[in-house]
Length: 108
Image (cartoon, rainbow, N blue to C red; front, side, top):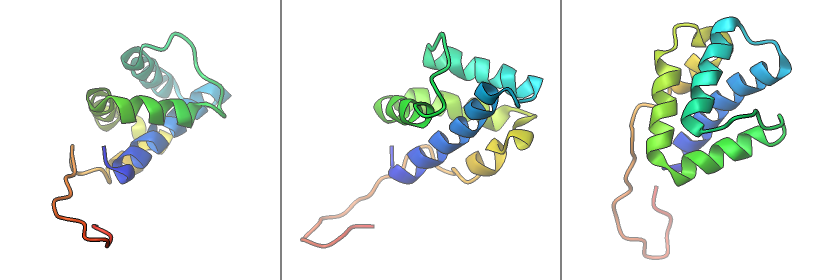
């Protein structure tokens, strides 16, 4: 997964998860977080400090997992109130490929 997609997806899920952990999420947000935890096979919530790293690690190691969480965030009708809609709306591609040969320069 490319770094921008990984960072954006991690941020969107972390925003939602943090709101749930803090106890300020709506019922719909709590429900969505429950579905995300199910996909991630998490029984308990990680601490707020560990949440982004655990999400990023899971998404980086399993693109299918990342795609499933992205689909949940995109389909959630109440995601706008969690701030996740603005973040996941910016992810357009499922995969990004960089093709070229690096001859000592930077490929973008």
